[in-house]
Image (cartoon, rainbow, N blue to C red; front, top):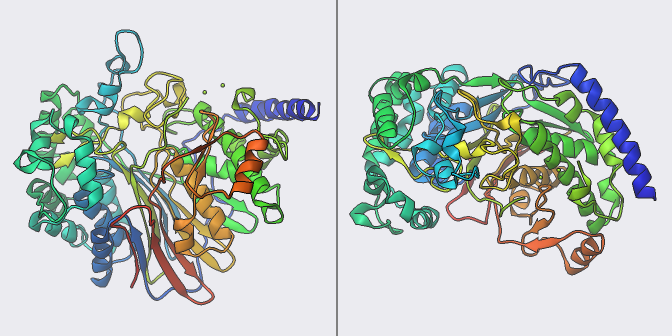
Length: 575
């Protein structure tokens, strides 16, 4: 009876606040503002730290810092090098989202997310029965959105960096031209997608030298991508979106059945947006606004949890409350969010502490809420793709950047003569409303495809400011990105260092399927038993994510940089 009463009261509050929020006609194109727009720090680190998914990329960033570059120049070096050495996760054929903090206190979100081509046709992603056509959504040129990463790189150099773009791109160009030894993750990714790679001649030429996957220890060169990066370095964004490269991209895509045009590339625009800022128990979290769903979900979860003192709870009850907050945030994720330039979203409602209080009333302290009792949504295993890196430079500039080509090896389609592996981000649209994408996330008309529209993302680059510590946090992992970043933020608040944050065991709930995915060893037997008795369904999964974190302890002026131990080749390094 108590549950029923609380649920009805919360629903009344939900209905009332929803009507108020929609009546206000909150436009997502006017992003949520920070309660304190500037957050300049009086102290400067005096040294720098970078954590990324590949040691070549981290070293490239440090090389650019040594040339006199700042965190944003280093970010260009890291991102472009990852395009060469970690194409299974990101690249110049994809996009990125970034939270930047300048030493003068200015904070901005850079949206270099891919966009749908003008000729997008939802029918291309349906089979004859009206069900999602997974092949067209995930493989080949129809699955690819217009890339945003090259424009984003050029934007960083023009508006935030100190060095010429050619200096920041120099390490990636050198590595692509002279060669590198692929790590086990890349070798395994190519082997995993070999069947699809073989459908495209230019993909075979790049990823199957001698007609077979590369092996670890083999020197691998990428001269076509080196040439594309050189043109980007020489001409800025026009080196990719106009001229030689653009012509090759469009010709290759159209020859293989895609629908890109030269105008699609020429008209691509980077968007600057105001980050979402949430204050949680004395900590200030700066995170990603739409077209990322991640920051809204993290803020909603933290707002719900702010009504509890988690430090006074045992592990089982603390975890129960976090799971229940995740469940409710993901339900809203599925229904409301999309590209802010195309859809109206009730952000005032979703980010309101009053809305969180209403949701909190629906949570019982020792009993799981079946997702079927929340107002509707199916899922698959969490993904391990995408990539993230974190940077703090000696002056206190910070970059939290998440990059992706979506699924492993993106579309597997390489545009001949460019070295560019295209993304398969069209699958991140709600191609068929309330049908799951490759990560099991559902969507509504808010995330339906349209010409020039950005597909909803789970990328959640974030920066956390505490009374005496700062953390730059993010991770890949499909739908699990959101919960990984949330758990990383909570671990930072609990006082863990960078290595402790990236190494901690993870759990994940995304509303549907109604289960808690659990890494081996995440819960001790007593906690797992208590959660099960509360009604939670626990499902063991292999480890996921590749978190990269840099922390700054302002009191001791110590930087720590750490890369996730779950994957080889990552490197966190302080210089």
